[in-house]
Amino acid sequence: MFPNLSRETPIHMAHDHDPIDARYNARFARAFGGAMSAITKLWFRYAFRRADRIPAGKALFVGNHSGIGIADVICMLGASTTALPDGRRCVGMMHKAFIRTPVVGHIAAAFGAVPADPSSAKEAFARGHDVVCFPGGDLDACRPFYEARRVYFGKRRGYVRLAIEHNVPIVPLATIGSHLTYVLLPGGASIARVTRMKSWARCERFPLVLGELLALTVLALAFAHVAPWWVAAIAMLTALVPNPIRITTEVLPPIDVAAETAHIADPAARIEAAHALVHGAIDRAVATMTHEAPAQTSDRGDIGGARPLVGRICSSAADPRVSPDPLGPDPRRGLAGWRERHRRCAR
Image (cartoon, rainbow, N blue to C red; front, side):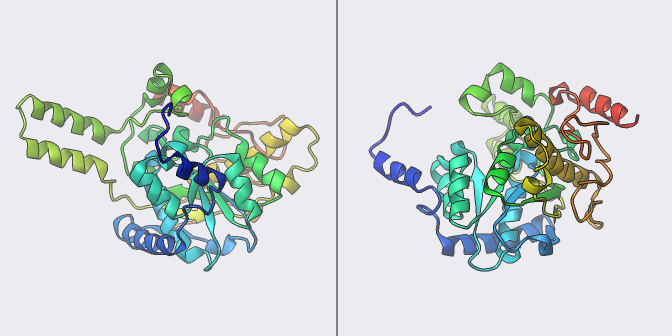
């Protein structure tokens, strides 16, 4: 993607050698986090519940991703300033394309984001830091608006391998409301497939946002001298600002995936069982929680309890105690797939 290296290459190489601390600024992180906390509480009426469930030791925080991945990230960034004690740092995994962006990447790195790479996470754990990631990434964040209460991780299992390898608990984070901060239309997966985004951008869904399409339409009308330019400017600005939707995040009971799956001999089956525990806990919480009432969960997540109410699968070859990844039908089928999966759940 970057065939020509600039004269600043030695600086970037130094950052790559130490991706955890090279660009991190603790003072800026606290100030920026405090500002985001105030803004999100005002604009999104954001609430971060059950911080008391966060373990004292280092952990891997795993959350669902929504609304093209903007609102939920800044909300959690603000919450971390009060939920975590001073001196405890949570390293966030971010897409490499954003980290390399001149302005956004510089700010993100300053408040603690690093490239979403297993080596970065391993180094963060080695230094005693927490790690937060959103395994679903674009697949989860760019799902259609009518799947706001769904959680898509696809075939991404690196996070459970990381937790098992480093023997750290996974703390599931369930967030609702954030997916409606932008209205995402169906068809993003088809666009990504046709343009082969996975090969050049590591994306499986294109963010097809209604507001951006309307803004581009108004911009085209302005070029055609049908609409005034000030209208186009307002439309573009409005498309960038997220809707003031109420957002709530709940910390779910930590899951020790290494211990809970230790009885499974087959490595592949163990990974799938661990994934099912975490994904099932988040999926069920997102389906059942409200802004006023907590998620339906037990002290051990979804282990041994009732299976997810939405998108559940009747059996699991990996572990009879948990349901596998409840992706159901291919999410690229849009509304038809959504209806099909709910017919299966009613059986």
